[in-house]
Each structure stands twice: as structure tokens, then as C-alpha cells.
Image (tube, rainbow, N blue to C red):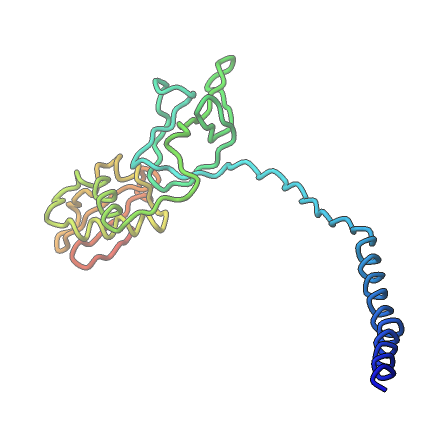
Length: 217
């Protein structure tokens, strides 16, 4: 009886292995082999598009408080005019560390071509930050030879800065007349004047130093 029982158990175990466990193992092995044999898909390599070159910088800002504009790219060349800190300049040509900011022109027939040049190392690509104190100091330097400058310093600086920002006057206007000049034609008013844009009566700008009024005649 015991022998028959053992034989039955052995047959049942063999059947379990043959009909269930082995087919399952074979299926798993076949699945693993199929996975291993699958060809590896190549990675999609995305090529970066070449960036277009940046356009050359042509607009610059003056860095020093004053900068001489010369008729040729040479520090010893004649100074045509003066530009000031924060002024925006358009550079047409760069040559040996200099920037040309005007067209070429000829003073006389058969003479050499000249243009307006500034040193590139005196220019900035970004407008400089000018503090209130720096602005005040710069403006006062234009008019420090005004009549009664110390007595009316605050009003002179305030109105000069106003005329500059409105582009009614330029720094050269104030430097040419050495600032505000006292007028002797007004008996009951303290009036000073400056010429902006020329030396004619129409270019004469008056300032009532007491009220701060700017007027023309």
C-alpha cells in the first residue's frame, strides 16, 4: 500500500514538471532569447542648427565725461567737436582702434578726405549709468563760469539741465558763452541769458533767476 502511494506521488510530481513547470520555463527562456535578439534601435541624434552670426555692433555710448572728435584716426589730429558722457554714436567704420562716425568730406577741392573719428576704447556698447550726483557735477562744469555762479548755483544747474534734456541747448552752447550771463536790460528783475544754436537775438534764452521762468524776447 505504501509502495503504491509513493509511486502515485512520484507520477504526480513528474506530470506536474512535464505538463506545467517545464513548458512555463521553456516559454520564459524563449521570451528572453527573443528580447535579446531584438535589434537595438539607433538613437535619434538631433543636430543643432548653426546659429546665424550676430550682427556687428554699430551703436555705442561715450564713456568719458568729454571726448574729442578728431578729423582722422590719430590722437594728434585736429579736434572737430566734443561729445559727452552718455551720448549715443553710430559707428560707420572701424579702423585701427578708431570708429568713424561721419561721412567723408573734403574741405576744399583737391584736398584730402576727412571724417569724424573717435577712439573705440572710449566707447561702451551699453549706455553708462549716470547717478544724480554725477549728472549734477557734469552740468555744473558746463556753467561754472556763469555770472554770480555761487549765488544762484541751484537754479542755474536745474535750468541748464532742463534745457539740455529738452535739446534746446547743447553743452557747447553753454561752454561757448561760458555759462549764464547777467542781463542789464531788465531793471526790476534778476535776469540771466545764454545763446543756444547761434548768436542772434532769436537764439537768446532768458532766465528769471527768482521765479525760474525761461523766456524769449
